Image (tube, rainbow, N blue to C red; front, side, top):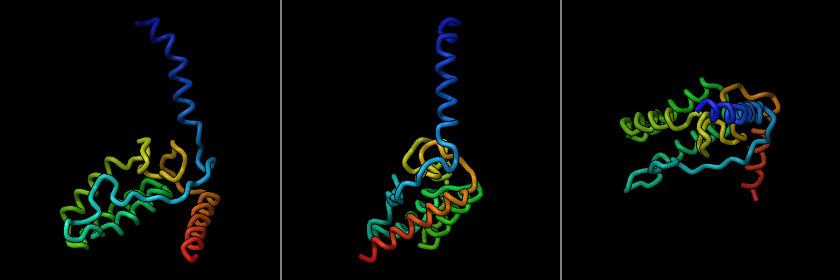
Length: 147
């Protein structure tokens, strides 16, 4: 067992260092905005299939660009309030619980906090250049929608 640990330790240390250092904040380009609606959750009710879809798209936008822990918490609470304002307060609370668990930037998923940036991208304020990339992506989307 000790020999196995000794032979694997350098590999594990190198893998950990690669994960922590591979993508420092601001080093990667921002991917285009994508949304999957409410992820693994329905976008609405059987009678109104997109009742709270706009809430989820706004939430995805916040998650795409990422930022601080406080910004994530605010985005998650806004999702809860938005769904509650559609007449579904219990569902809003359920969705809040789901995104608090499943949306962590520590998960290597396509819907994690900061998913527009290369993984790993943890909590932290966007730099000036990162904010400029967000604005440029938004301007490009507006221009492509006007054609």
